[in-house]
Image 1 (cartoon, rainbow, N blue to C red):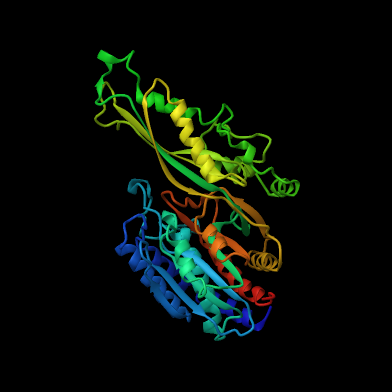
Image 2 (cartoon, rainbow, N blue to C red):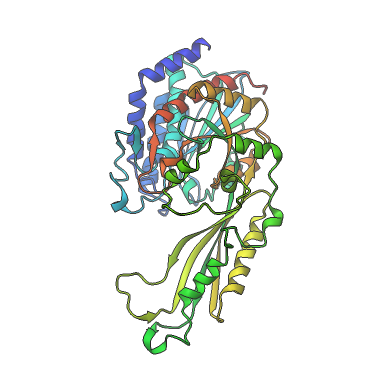
Length: 465
C-alpha cells in the first residue's frame, strides 16, 4: 500500500461521520426527476452536489443546464501528468417516493436504524454512489493534496426518467469527457459484503394497451352474459404472455444468446440459497419460482427475458358498483437480453394484443421507450484493477455478475465514448428496496465501497494509457 493510499484511508476513517452527514443532507432534497423541468428539487440537488464537489477539492465545478432535461453537475481534477484519466459517473435524481403510508419513516427524512441501514428515497440509488467518489476524492486531496489519477466527475439529473438527453449531452461534451476508463457507480453487489462488478444488463421494452368494449358502463345484471367484459378480455391476453411455467410466450427465444459454458459455471459457483432468495424478495409461502427450471435462478434474472405488468387500471374498489365497465388499461414491459432486438420485441408485443384480445373488442396499443441490453467482456487491466480494489476493501473476493435491471445511461456511454473499459460498480443489495418504499443503504457496505474507490484510483494509476 502506498503512502498516499494510507493517508487517504486514514482521512476517510477520521471524517466518516461527516461524509455520512453529507449524504443525509443530500438525501433530504426531493430531487424527483419525474417532475417536469425545471424542478425545484432537482435543481437544489444539483447545486448541493456542486457544493460538495467543490468542498472535496475538485475544480471547475459547475451545474450544467441542458435543453430539455434536468441539470448535470461536473467537476474535475487534472493535475496527474502521465497518469490515466478516469471518468466517474453517478446520478443525483431519484424516483418518486411512492405511497407515504408504506414508509416507516418519511421518504425525505433519512433515518439510520438499529439494523445498520440508512432509510430514505435515493440514499442507495444513487446518492450514496455520488458520495462514494466525493468522499474518496476528498480523502486524497485533503490528506495529500493530489489524486493518483486525473478525474472527471459527471453527475446526471434524469437517470430515473430514462436519461433521454444523455446521449446528446455526451456528444456535445465528448472532448471534455474523454477518458481512459469509465467508472459508473449505480449498480449492485451480489449480496451484503460481497463486492461485485456488473458486466451484463437486460434491456427493457414497454407498451400501454387499452381494451374497450362499450362507450359507457352498463348494469351487469341487465346486460351481463352476452356483453363482453373488457377487463376479462385484457386479463386473458395478459395471461397469454406467459405459459404455465411462467416463461415468456412471445416468438423471441430464437434470438436469445445461449449461455456459454463458462458463464453457466460462473453462475453455479455463486453462493445461492433458495430460502434466502425467497425471504429477500418477500415471496409468499407456497409460491413457486417460475421460469426455465434448467437455468440457475440468477441466470433467469440476468440472461433470460421476463414480462411484468407495471400498472393496471379498471375501476377502483371505492365507488364500484354492479357494472360492466367500458374499458381497461395496462402498462406492460419486457426485460430483454442478448441478442434480442428491442424493436422486434416491441412489434411482437403489439401484435400479441392485437391478435389475442378476444371477442372483437377495440384494442389500442401505445409504444413506450425501448432500451437495449448491454454486455461487456470483463477482462483486461482495468477490470483486474477494479477487482483487486474491491477485494481489498471488502476483504472478500470480488465477483462478476449480471443485472436483471436496465440502466439507460450505460448504452449512451458505450456508444459515444466507446472503446474504453466501463466499470459498473454500486452499493445496492437484495434488501435495499430501490425504487420501492423504505429504500435503504447498508452503511457498512457504503464505507467499504468508498474505501474501494480509494484503492481503485491507485490501482488505475498504473494502467497503460
